[in-house]
Amino acid sequence: MTTPDAHAAAMHSFSPETESTVDQVLDYARDRVLHPGVPLDKPLTPKDLARLAGGSITAKGIGGRRAAGLFENVLAPACLSTDHPAYLSFIPSAPSKASVAFDVVVSASAVYGGSWMEGAGAVFAENEVLHWLASEFGLPAGSGGVFMQGGTIGNLSALVTARARARARGAEAGRENPRRWVIVCSAEAHSSIASAAEVMDVDVVLVPPDASGRLHGDGVGAALDEHGDAVFAVVATGGTTNFGIVDDIASIAEVTRSRDVWLHVDGAYGLAAMLVEKMRPVFAGVEHADSLIVDPHKWLFAPFDACALIYRDPSGARSAHTQHAEYLDTLNDTPDWNPSDLGIQLTRRARGLPLWFSIATHGTDRYRAAIEYGIDLAAEIAEEITRRPGLSLVRDPQLSVVVFRRDGWSAADYQAWSDRLLEDQIAFVVPSSHAGEPVLRFAVISPLTTFELLSGILDTLEA
Ligand SMILES: *Cc1c(COP(=O)(O)O)cnc(C)c1O
Picture 1 (tube, rainbow, N blue to C red):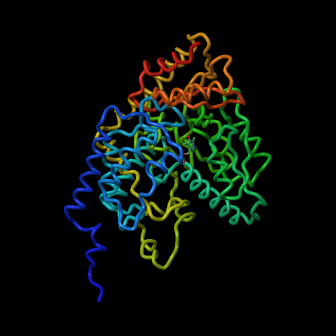
Picture 2 (picture 1 turned 45 degrees about the horizontal axis):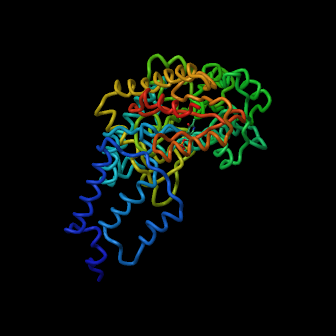
Picture 3 (picture 1 turned 90 degrees about the horizontal axis):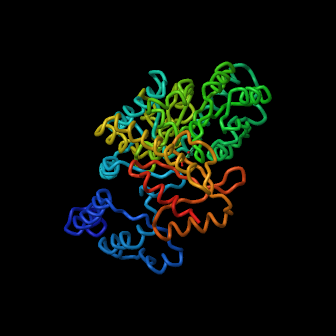
């Protein structure tokens, strides 16, 4: 008979050793969350890390104290603090203290978020947030969704659902499947749409946006004329990542509705701005989306990683995504709300809970104010850029991304400046490019990023 083995169970049982490891880790987490002056930090080379941190995997273990020390003193400083107010590249993160603390609770609670049977309480709380978001975006009662890992997986899951509907409609109408299925989107759409198309083995038709970078309904209409029933989804972008440009969703929705084509709105970064009253008109038409995404780990102040994927009618998602297996039938033979059925995943962390806790704690007003601050700060620093000799704006910011150039600089000049800025731990601003021209870009997410900080960075661009 097998009996519990003290050696095997040592890492699961309560003992002075496990207690001290848990204390050490939670103390570190507490300090990291509450400490005001977390440095920006910077990467090390594989060679340096091998020298400083190699050899931690051993038969007997190196002990919690040494492993934690290794993380705190070597590994963590070799990771950029994406929540630093001077981290301004890509899309920064700026999780609220409450959301980060609660992320620890999610781990400690061993919640399985894939099914109602196992995670009812967590799924209920996540759905409270999803329903609030859905109503902000103007989606009808009955819409619903799931928190996925990120926007890439959210977009892919929505597009798979859209294609399943197109296939079903085609079959009902007695049509043959097209030789190649087609997604229509802007040439400025996020790279994850091309990635989804690759995974799905479908084609992407890129429609050129107007001079200001916005996709409109007439361009989409022309693409639909050309590709007909092969088009199973149109993707509108609710805030491009490089510029923060929002497509003309209203005119696009008019076209998709009149042709009965699925409209997906990719709002991974920008759709959060719709929570700000004065920005609502920019997103007009979102209420017609068949599916949409917004990433809480971007502009909704939640920790990595979470994408809210919402469907106007979740039943189509369920038939596209529910996994069937003998051991799962007990979950599927019920009318329960099972989040795993709505996207590409089975086992699921209740990754919407940190956002739920933080919004429940602080209320939605603070969220609106924090997002509005980023929009206003971007407008202010854009104005400052136009005032400074030698700098020019590439385009007026619509959301919280500011793209500008330093006159006369080559790509190499930008790169050298950017490297020095990080080396000196002043800021993390990597060069981007637009229409083949190297440019600089501030992405403002953190409510702790200030005008002084940004204008100080502009100072370093002089002479
Ligand atoms: C960031 C982003 C994505 C991808 O989201 P991930 O969470 O990084 O996978 C998709 N679309 C847009 C517009 C984005 O900004």
